[in-house]
Length: 357
Ligand code: FE
Figure (spheres, rainbow, N blue to C red):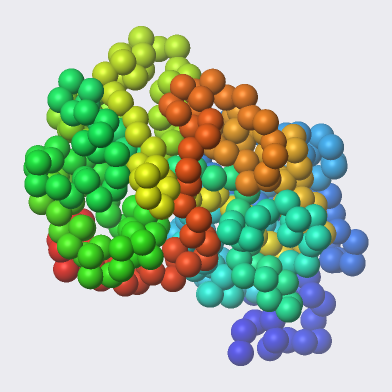
């Protein structure tokens, strides 16, 4: 029995104080929602500040933000249970959103606005009680290569990264990072599990160094000549393309970028998305915030501010870096984001077997 159900005679706010382990605290009654939103966010992008400020300006709702990575947020929600102050959760990976759903950390949402704005591919399964998470923006997992050593056609598919001719060339962040786990989970759908494991073994055999750092570190590794090929999310590349620094310009000069698998199933695309917390204390504000994030203004801001693509169809984006990289019109895979999550455990076991750290 938890602290909340153990003392039904106490007021809801008093119960919450006790559940949080605070003997002397007072919380306002929940009858009328305060103009506050408690946001747990894994979006690690400085350009998002303006997005949040615009919401507060338009609605008067103040945002209190807790920043952590996807896994940290899910662990925190679990530990806090019913006492969690979180109203909205923003994560940056389809598999982690799926995980939050199956661990019952998100509240089902009934919203025509969100259902209409977010295509079926990019949201949780619609159930009678509602939908538990919504994609808000998309990003592509791209291949970066050293133009001095390699031709684009040698690396124009994920499968080619495992070819023996690329021995000693591949650089990547950890195999267990959500961006890679989701790509590998998608590969299981495209190739089947046995062929995916053979492919992963090939990637390990081709590594230039043990996995370390983030996507930008891999891009820099290619530019320095230490790596021949790397995997990186599109927005990290676009950030470099838009940069005025001489160092970043030199990186862009040296590297080539491909949107893989254009002649087969399309480039792997992941989402950043949002959900209402299971125990949200300000559920109306939470819904207002998610609805704001699918508004035209916010959607275009994902594209202009953080170099992502909107999930809402039919918007004209005008981001020169995405255009320069070839991202104005590319073929993306059509897998439902929820399917990718279901392969996570299988993929992690494969990584352990092939020694992909
Ligand atoms: Fe990222």
